Length: 244
Image (cartoon, rainbow, N blue to C red):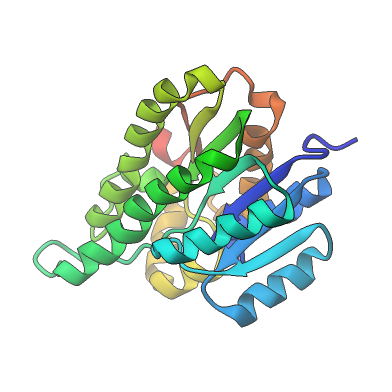
């Protein structure tokens, strides 16, 4: 029997990278999973890869109408949510002096605003005793050049978690933040140069990037009863990068 047997999970941004790896693990552990993604082709490929107990819903977590469609579908198909993994996010290196309004608004619009409304719109479907967690980043506690806006948007999530767990304590809903370090994903290929990748690898004690499957293992922990006494915490899964 899997750690998530019979559970219903929603994972935003679950069509690729670490969130897709988590969706696969959730299904292996017995959950039914709803995943979202902005590109239909990528979403269809993810659904095929997962293979069973999954529904893919095209949408942008920064778009409130898309979020309404997501949760309307979840309500119609399953009627409840046990696990909400708000993972949709973006990051782009823009140094101070070159930051634009568009860059700031897009980053905070998805990472902070989109996460907030993902959680708020899910609340009517969330079971008491459920688990909410969000994808943060160790960038929020490390001063990486060019990533100040991204880091600030991710730091917001821990403030959300601390406030929300207090508001939701009557329903025994836990709220945490899962903060990966550098992970080898397609998105990383889009935002980091080869030189930047080597720089990040040099900061990780083992000398290699994390793998999506390593994040998925941590996600299962936060989703399951194994973390029943973990609440309002940031779990850094970064190979020790933030500790040194």
